[in-house]
Image 1 (cartoon, rainbow, N blue to C red):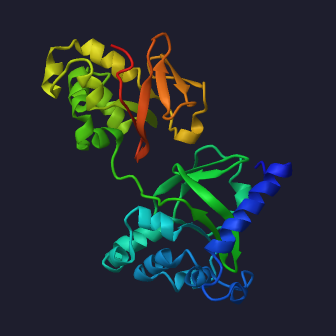
Image 2: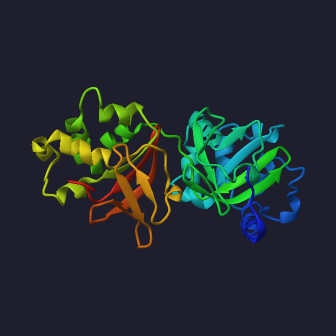
Image 3: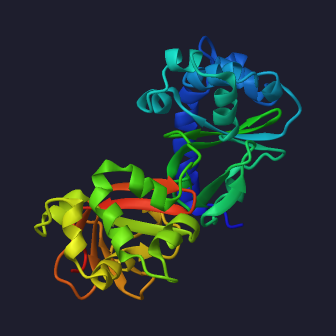
Length: 318
């Protein structure tokens, strides 16, 4: 595995150290935490920004586990991350222990202490977590991401493992791409378009439910309204081949998060169309090469079992 190099590595360590100093120091005195002898449970219990995750660990009945031999790698959402996700202390207190255990274990790798040096240079590395679900980790010389969530501090070494701080929370995907689309009321036009565009044996709905991994730049309802369609049923008059064309032109045959896409980069879709990305403005934009207009990315990084869903506000080809 490649590692950080030169001044960029030193800068990263300094930034990480600054974050950790406020993230993991003891509520009363930083000197009371000896990271060489303290277990993960002890560090979580005495951290200044780990109290909510520590409460989830206790609710799950895993505090004694994290006091054991390990080793463990734990990606710890800070209190800020959990609060922003709506996971407050009262929510944790009322959560079923089984659900709490699944949540904590989805943030935990059992049997290994994975430091940042083993994560840098990875590209959507699939790692099976302690609850049996997988995460995808990417690391470069600037940062590390887990399921698209930034790691904001690395390598807090405990006696029985290592902790990394997360800017957000990890949620195992429960649905495939087709299920995400069908359940989203802002994508009801697209849901109908997929049904109308289905052909046998080359079924787009089958691809989105069991194929992949894919990244789908899904046009939202407003994208269809801009073309004069007032309801999903209005698409019944559209040629199915035209529907298949625009859907396939938005579907990339690989799992991608925002950090995988750089400014002015291009990606090939499943029908060999080329998507071009402009990331210099207020919002990210995507264009089908050869067409004169851009679509804004209105949401990103919604993870499915078989890929990632982005929403865009224009149909790229019609």
